[in-house]
Length: 452
Image (cartoon, rainbow, N blue to C red; front, side, top):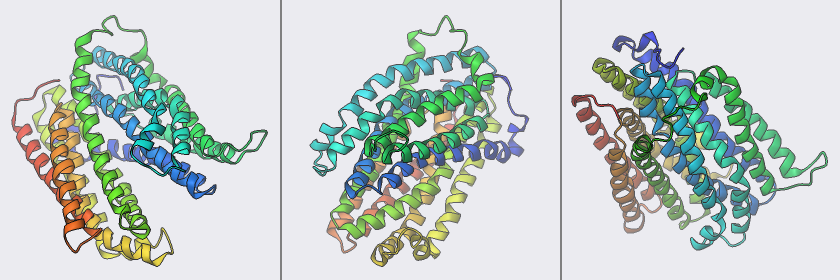
């Protein structure tokens, strides 16, 4: 498929088919990306509680840094998909090359922020015996920053071209490499001394290098013409300003959401170890199911952007409707499982009955809030395809940063709900975000179509 070609099945009656064909491999990629951090945490857990805590803390800090860069590069979604929908091959290629330039520029300050992880973690009063190890973990991750950002550019490009399978294979291989290198570098062998936490970080950084190298090889037919030759208008300032205008709000929106859940986790820690463990189980399960509507939202962003590029309002409406039905529908089904058999699900994680019991109380609440979570992430994808990224940022700031956290704190400390109130606050925040964004999507679909 060339940059200007579109699947024949994007017509409104068949809106579900192209959506699922694009969304399902994206979901696989999302799960694969999440597994890298899980593998690091699980394998280091065999060393010591301090090592486990350090990798968990370092991974949280490192992902917050990388997600800011990823958020800015998600500006490629509307830029590339709208040009692709309009059949403008040269504009697509220019967008890809500008994405590469932006990734290189972003890698410098982001690497700097990673380097100073240790003083930041001390500033926010994290455990003194954990902070040095977490700082080491983040510093060793630095060589993987640029490969991660370049991989993001390649991934977004392949999604726009409806060629996600090479990305999926890349993530599969990178995860296998990560497992093997983690075992070797953490515990030593074959002439290598055990490196512990630093070895885990080195494995992840190396795996990110593998990701970009392998993707460039597997997708050479698609990416080659995009990357060569260098286009004469590459360094014009206005397109970069547009990408930042679109991308910075995405990055801030992602950080606001991550911060809200992190703060709830810290507040949960004030109630005790059992509550924190139960919270982590419920949050892990909710994060896993969230991968599906997030993938649907990413696919919707591409399809909506292409519809805008073609000026196809019927496909725009049909694609939006299909994405909302699939995203919310999946979350309703999994939410029912959380509501009906929470104890059985939580018991897969641990045999500690107090932890299982507390997680079983939180899971039905997760079953409710994840329906709203599915709606809001699909709406964000639709709006991103339309080029509207400021609205989700502002809505997340109000819904999560103000209403959700304020309600969580009030319910936890001013009512008899205690730690359970923290999660009911999340329900309130997510419901507000979902309903406001749904209204915004409906309004946006009635307005004249406009390219970014």
